[in-house]
Image (cartoon, rainbow, N blue to C red):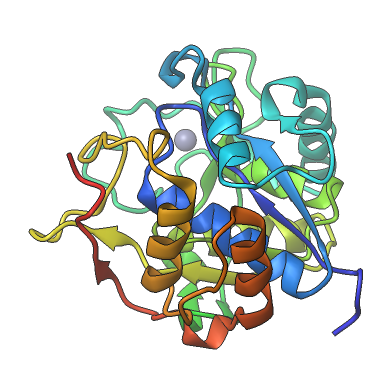
Length: 290
Ligand SMILES: [Zn+2]
């Protein structure tokens, strides 16, 4: 381990309140960064204005601060990063790693994987999406929590990096920003594990070593639904921060922290942090449901 070389991040999208799962991802990513004497950065993934809730970004940052989590650098907002995404797309285009796609949603219905319809087409003047050429072969890596991962490029298929409505696709924006921020470690929920092979393909195409990944278990309610902003609106924003930290550490399989103040509890949690104890599977949580 190189001390000081670690840069981690927490990257919420401002589409609602912070819930238990995202609080766990925030705490785990912060703990892993601190345990490696690294930096912890916050990035607001506000790429999709129609889905955003006014005030959510401010509320999320305030909730993090109450939990004792403050970004080590100014918060990055993806909505202000278009120029960087344009430049990355130009690199991919000049390397012939992307192509324009004018397929309608209807013409693709019934296809789980993009059938390659537009791969040979020339650049179009009409409204179109831009897709990344996934190519053939396997992608394999070791996830620090979820274990060995293996994905078939053909089964993933050519995926969109720029949408026909002009919005940037999540996959491209995340990779460009991870590169810009020098992110070395990504700790996030297992619901994003399916995005990881796409992101690794983009790192590879942009000639940058991908970060190390750790995908945390997803918090579930007793009937097995993944907790999300849709199924669980229970805000942790009003929760007692010390109690929340204790719940999260228990969920993450860590030893109970010592300390009566938030600061002392955080110090204890950093000292005892052990990624190997994080359970790879979903765990049942219900205390934060209203
Ligand atoms: Zn197409």
